[in-house]
Amino acid sequence: MDNDKNPSLRDPISTKARILDAALSTFSRKGYHDTRLDDIVDESDTSKGAIYFHFANKERLFLALVDQFADLLERRVQEAIDGEAEGMVRVKVALETVLETFGRYRRPAKILLVQAVGLGTVFENKRAEVTDRFARMIETYLKEAVAIGDIAPVDTEVVAHAWMGAIYGIVIRWVTTGDPEPDRIMNGLVPLLLRSVGYEAAVANPPSTAANSQVRIK
Image (cartoon, rainbow, N blue to C red; front, side, top):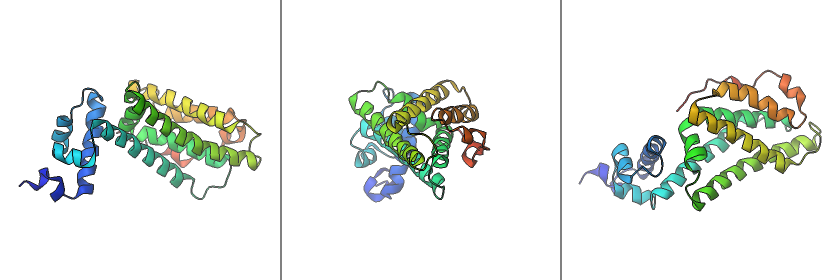
C-alpha cells in the first residue's frame, strides 16, 4: 500500500500541514465554491481519506485556515509587544504588527476578508469571532493607555471595533486590487488611527520595526 496515500501510515502532523497549504493555495486561486476536494488532493499529493481523517468536510477545512491565520496574527502581535511598556506604545506596535502581518500573508488575508463574505451563517460567525478576538485585544491595550494617562478616556470598545473596520476596509481593497501598497497603508493608516484618540505624540515618532520591515507577499 502507498504510504503517501494512507493517513494512518504517514506523520499526521505533516500530512495535515500539507493539506492546509494546498487548501490555502487552491481556495486563494479558485475561490471556495469552485474548489473541489479533488483539487486539494492533487495539490497536496494525499487522498480524500487523508483529508477526511483531519477535516469533516470542505467547510471545516476552510474554517481551519481562518483559525490558522488568526492564531498566527495573535502570536505575532504578542511577540511584538513583549517587553514594551504599557500604554500607547503597545497600541501602536499592535496596529503596525496587524497591518504588517496582513501585508506578508496576502492569501490567507484574502480568504478571511474576501472569500468568507457571503458564504453563509457559519462563515459569517467565524469572521465575527475573529474580528471580536482582535478588537478585544486592541481594547485591552487602549484601556491600559487610558489608565496610565497616555490618552483621555474614550469608549475603548467602540474605538477598537471602528479601528478593525478601518483596517479591514483598506486591506480588502489591497488584496483585491493591489492598491494601495502595504507601505502606504502602514504609513497612512496608523497615524490616522492614533490621532483619532488624541495621541499626537506617537505620530511624530520614527516608525517602529514593524513598519520598516520588508513586506513579503504570499
